[in-house]
Length: 80
Image 1: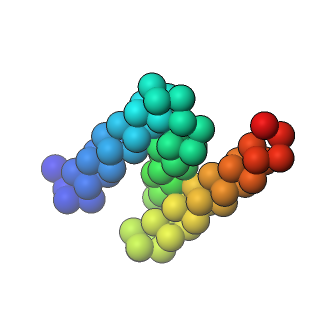
Image 2: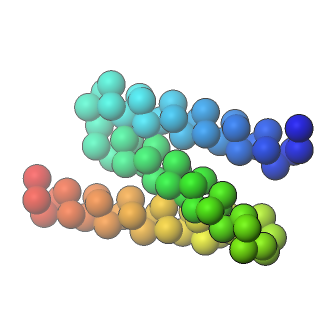
């Protein structure tokens, strides 16, 4: 198993744990954080066929996840 694959499996387990913990504690911000990490990992893997380094794909993927989390937190502040 490649080191990157193992690292991604650990990241998925950690992000899933944060998401589940957020759901069980009824914490919107923790749930969004876990979901944001999972979105970031998904984008990293979606960009894999495009090429580029793992660092570039990680920056883009986690950047997209961060934008979604921050946007959802701001929307939740005004809606809820």
